[in-house]
Amino acid sequence: QVQLVESGGGLVQAGGSLRLSCAASGRTFSSYAMGWFRQAPGKEREFVATINWTSGSTYCADSVKGRFTISRDNAKDTVFLQMNSLKPGDTAVYYCAAAHTVRVVTSKYEYDWWGQGTQVTVSS
Image (cartoon, rainbow, N blue to C red; front, side, top):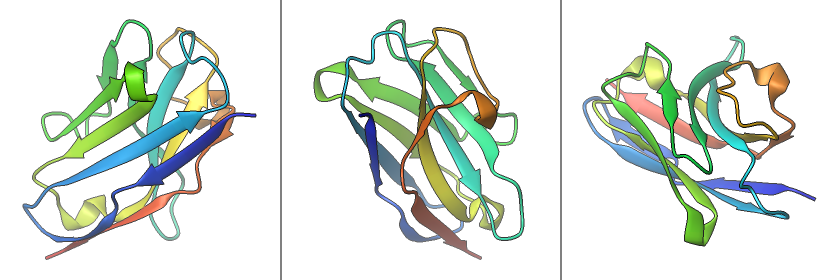
């Protein structure tokens, strides 16, 4: 049973930074892609970033490139999302997800396991 637990959300002013963490457990994640998604009120859940657990290769959505960085700590089975230069438009619930694949996957439908989400609110 895969479990993903997010933490690190909160309230921050525009221009500020937050670091989200996703603690993963339940199996060995060497053949997994880990992703971050977000969902704002009344909107679809959208892709933010993904990382290949073994190679460390990453891919980010255009809307966050240059501001957000995804990384992982293999020893702690934890994935991070460093968010800098935050904007009010980044306000959303952020979800961690896992997919049993080594491909780069940006579609939410390809992810099999999800965390409960953590709220990020950016004030102007």
